[in-house]
Length: 57
Image (cartoon, rainbow, N blue to C red):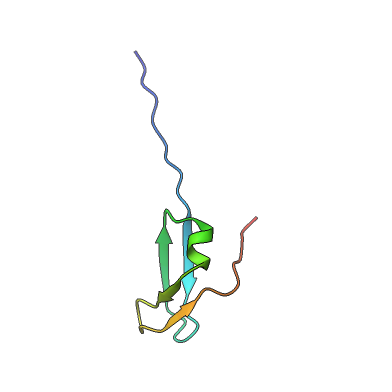
């Protein structure tokens, strides 16, 4: 009997800090959830909302 692989799809968000331009990622998160919160930069601690959401086509 052949068993198929199981694939799970997650949303991955790449964030660039508006203060230090440091980069970090958020995974498995809803777009509405990320725009409703303040986020802390993991590099410099700068707190801000997310601005423009750039969607890749």
